[in-house]
Length: 470
Image 1 (cartoon, rainbow, N blue to C red):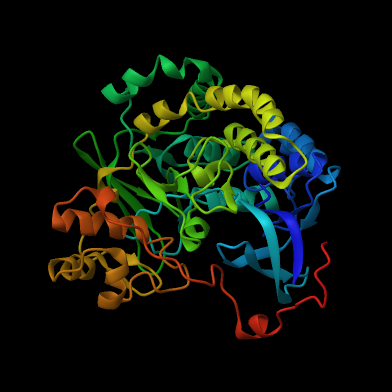
Image 2: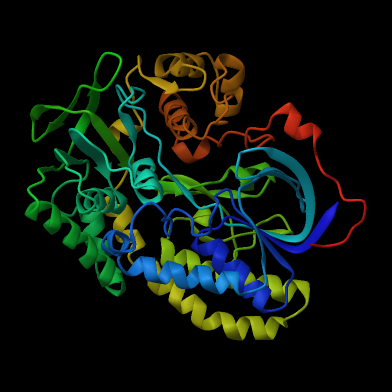
């Protein structure tokens, strides 16, 4: 079995910052990343010319390039196209490594410390027609746009809420696409909860100004923006044909070829749940997140979390948290004293507070829509197993009290995604039937493999003859 001192999982801003600083401080470090190039979703690029990328990504492109360069010169080992399919609390990780042609081989590695920088995922919301061809997440469209220069064609509608929805709309227009409408589930004016958080958010004025700029840009480009959207429906036979919604007491219908939806992001917690780490319910973000200390350490002694996987904060906060995790790893593994760690961490904690100052305002501005927790009975909630909301409600009425028990009633959550897409909706449905607070319903239990793994991949596990480190 091969070994390393520090294993970092994820090549986004948090993972890159953590791996680079740890390696620079003398920690033997390896970063594994599912993507072929470092950068993560935020700094992903590759499909456009340099000038177009500058227009699409702006300042973030330059900063991302600097972050990647610092990592590449840090001495950390980089393993692209590598998925983690198993994690043990004692620091053993099962890796699936694929070459450029897609052929895979599995191996195991033991690390003295593991940093999970697995980021966030778009909040899944089951609404009428969400499984139709022509309906996809806005983040997926952004991946295709950044990595392959694929610009949406036809009548494109964006629906949901949150800053990413505005960013994707802007990027599509900048890349030469057209947008028929943007449907915002949040109201046009700030609600009372958001107004209360406005004073503290002042330190994040740049992000606020950026969001206002997005709206103004859409107005200049003539994109109709509808606020306070409810009752979203994707219509079509075999494929999307139109989008329906209610707004201002009026029902609207718009022909559409592509519907891009986004309802905010939530932490990716499959890995932290797999190792048995303690989690807490984040009421503001309406999602589970791991319980962490000020340096990102979990309740499992060898593991830490950096970035949005520990709670949604954005790219700047993720980068800072990666450096905090790296300092703690250096102190735990020997190259650095705890006093030095604390001295270097003090300004980073201030930067993290500044980077997350706007987050409470965003959480209040863009809550999940009411229909996210109350899908109609005939809507498919678990796409993997074809389980409808009616079957989940019926199982709950028959005595099912949680998502894990629901697997025995309906097989909901037992497909390839292991509850990634249905888990939050299932939790809300069970809570509603039993009249309980949503935070009293536990998340789905996670079992290996964390990623799809063939029997052939498993059979080819490569075990080193010696314990030499990379």
